[in-house]
Image (cartoon, rainbow, N blue to C red):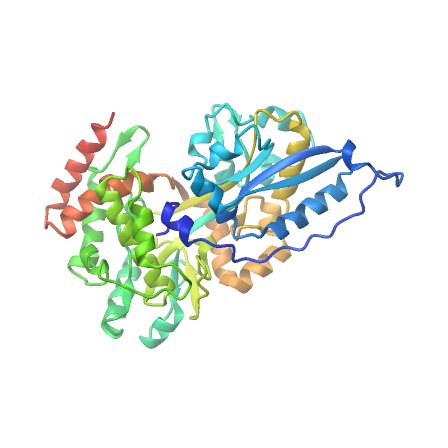
Length: 457
């Protein structure tokens, strides 16, 4: 599963074209032009690597907003990948730099922002505006930004962890595609049948440590419940044992050491060596460095069309990092088990606490949340997500049933914190290596991981 990492930054590219928004003439109601010098300037920042949305497309949105609000002028501050690398991949240090003068910015890596005083609490502004409709936002997205009565940002889009499948490989195996509402048993049956019918060069499922996490939660287990870790919970142990058997008993998932021999020649540029170097830089524990490299290879295998089933973020459909998939594909939500879970990222707009124009900035980010999706995620506003235009676009890309299933899951499935993957990679990752390579007992390996978690400072 793709994670936000240095590897992903290097693999990402601006590959999506844009939304056309009509612009109105700049001026006041009586037709008098407002001099640019007299307009309130809103500086808006966004990271180049994250958006999958060109600067020209954001400029269209800014021009449309400027036309509708003749007293305001949005100016864009694109944070380039080169700037990000020079900052040590510290996006927040750039957007909060006083010289850049940013009033608002886009981010999805916002766990550290939720209780950050540098970000403006939007709740008082919204309460003071009786026309502002918070109920239009999905609770899943809003709750990700709430802490203790504060609303730290406005959600824009919801990025879901989904299963992708390679239609071409399913056709080679003469098997039906995964269906909406499939179960964990369906998944195993499908993967085993794929392994039986496909040539050895193809992978039935490329899952590694990250993919274990949703299976754990769907089975009723957990990495953490509240402040307590739950790796020794019987349901967690059952789920991990089941997951390990995908490789050890069913042969539908490669062992980590086997995947390390996968050496493709990516068509989209870059290389495995670049990915390995990026993941290995900095003070990164060896287990994370190794899993990062392995999972980057697993991702490349899927991009190259060598994998029948793999998980990724919805926004990564049609390829990332310059890839353009040359195979037919589809998506389905995570298999049901004891329950249905949903892992999601929330893209959000944040307002700097230093801005001298909070009401004006709120108007701008509210405008952005009302547009069709800019980043390929599901709109955080129901009115946008359920609009005819957005439904048609998603239906054309992923199918009507798949999109409807996404909306149902956003409303009703049990949400799980995507940030748990960071914990999983280090501690669950070590346990998985002990189980898959060392032959350790699952319960004993998870007990050691639990003890290591509880011993953290």
